[in-house]
Length: 313
Length: 90
Ligand SMILES: Cc1ncc(COP(=O)(O)O)c(CN)c1O
Image 1 (cartoon, rainbow over the protein chains, first blue to last red):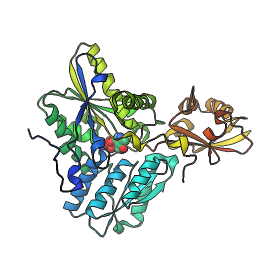
Image 2 (image 1 turned 180 degrees about the vertical axis):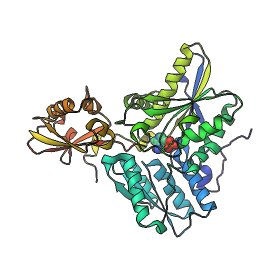
Image 3 (image 1 turned 180 degrees about the horizontal axis):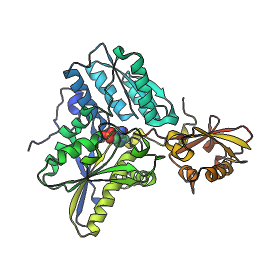
Image 4 (image 1 turned 90 degrees about the vertical axis):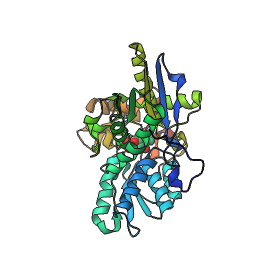
């Protein structure tokens, strides 16, 4: 098995993407079950989406679809946008993003810092509204843009198949018994699951979704009420669990206060799902090792409305 | 007080797909109580025992009701409430 090591010197910011550490969450572990979170906020763009965006960029350049005369455009709830912006700046491509105007201010500010142009879509329509909005822009001027569409692009999950999933197996050896993570585009879940399912011993892979359509877990989709991403294949994984927004938010608060782990709410919900799974295994008298993803850092959130009196629409 | 309420996509399963619905009440709280009778389940998705949920925002015109009198904010005929989730989704 190849070892994935974090190199001490980097040639390019792109080489800083991936090889993230696994943090053992001993404080949350019941008897007999280990819990690990893969710290994806340690990617240079600060989230798990750096991996998908890098794969999308590199594959599109390699096959000639993305050229310097085109503008890369996609819809995003923020983290993919930060990642595209970073890569665009580093590789010399122009980037335009369509985001619902109710994404957090931090995401708008970070993407703009890279020189990206942002088009805001209707906050009442959520991320599906951003998808429809970007399609209209591209249809009106197809020559001008390269539209990777992260929701239907196989490079999205391939970034996780080649990176995230392979790293987990390499770093935990044969120990991992369960994997659980939340669905946004489903790229993380699809890529990691495909890789883990190739392992010689079965590993149970569970997807997590917000419990309700009207949820507050940024970056995640409630599939039944959303445009289902074409890359999402329900038959790959072993089941789906749900997490209430409040459980996810409370876990994020607990992680920062008790473990010094400052993560966003999707990471809080992921870690809640991992802990609940570990508890149920332990109650059945089983041993195991549950792995999940810490998607991004908490400073990308900072309760937007508490002191920002208005949205800037 | 007859008012209108704009509904975000994530709540439209409760309003038969409608983007805007009518409600009645002298305060935001009363309007939400009445709305919950015509569209059961909507109130519990917006408020909890502490008030408007952490991840939901309710605007009266362009003002977040947290900066007015929260759920006790008075309403007048023709007012418009807008429910905006604090996040965009995935
Ligand atoms: C904060 C956050 N959490 C989780 C996810 C889900 O990742 P994926 O798109 O790979 O399913 C995203 C991306 N939408 C995200 O931005």
